[in-house]
Image (cartoon, rainbow, N blue to C red; front, side, top):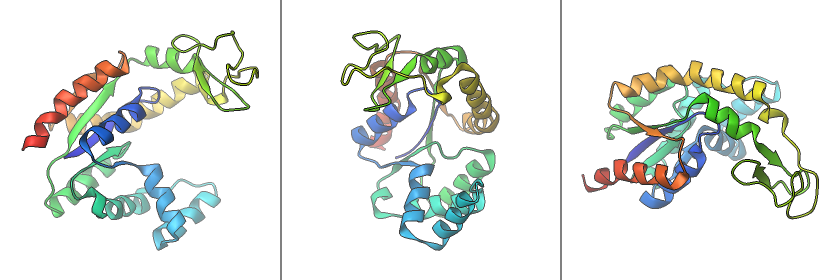
Length: 217
């Protein structure tokens, strides 16, 4: 089973990726994890990426794509895998299609957790964090016992700089610009849209129904 999981920032994609990985026994792989692994291992690709990042640049597809190819060749991927946030662009999607065909692997099951932008903005701007212990709260769905105060250590909660409405809106626009064409690419191949504006358990149930038939192929 090969699963591609898409969703905008704040969609709960990380929670669902962990659920899929545990439920179906496949590794959940993110671009960030792959990149950190190559850098830590000191591979030639990792060294090249580290130099770019040290200079404040962005690591391009010429490095990311072969890193992903290397990761997918590892033994733990033999029974399938989940890609969380890759492919992020249309050229990456085309690369992945060619890679899977070259390795004679099955076509991926693409799932897009669809959440309205207004709901995402509401979710993220309601987040508060403790500057001491790092615990995250949500003033709407998971508020502290005392408004503005951390339950664990009594510190005053803060709103992170990247949790403001302006920043969230910019991130969503960037996501749509880059990932929108990727989702359209996979929709032509039968990608699934899941309503992400619901409790996590309901989203999990839908995803499980989508993926369970693939385990008996």
